[in-house]
Length: 131
Image 1 (cartoon, rainbow, N blue to C red):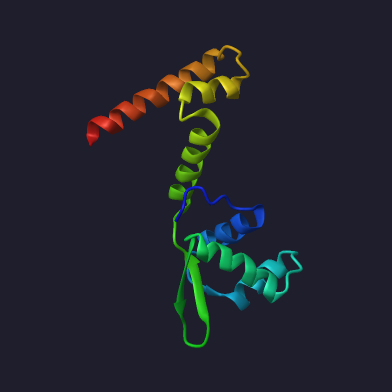
Image 2: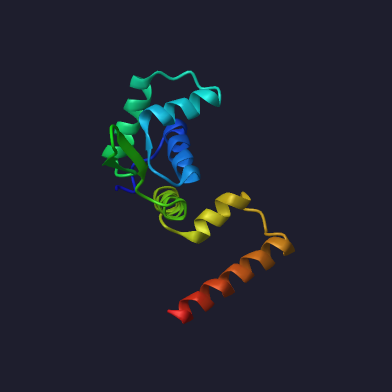
C-alpha cells in the first residue's frame, strides 16, 4: 500500500465500515448496509470504489462460497499513523515544530496545551526506553 494514496470521504467510509464490521463481507451485503444507512448507490458505483481500494492495497479479497468477500488489509491505527505521517511530511517537511506552529497559528501554547505536550513527550520517551 502506498502511503501517498489519499482516500476520498466515500472510500474512507467503506474502509471504516469494514473496520467496524471486523469480518469479510460481500459487495451485495456492503451495498445493502450503506443503502440502509441512506446512501443510494448502485452496485457498479460500489464496485468502482472497492476496486480503487483494492488497487491501493487497502482491501483484501477472498473467495467465499458464492461471492468474493472483502475485508480491510490495514487496521485503523496503522492507517491513521501512515496518514498523519504523510501529512506531516508533505505539508510540514516532516517537522513537528512547523506542524505545531501551523496548528497554533504561531500563538503561544496555553499552559494546558503545554502540559499535554510535555506529557506526550514523556510517554514517547518511556515507550522508546521500553524497546
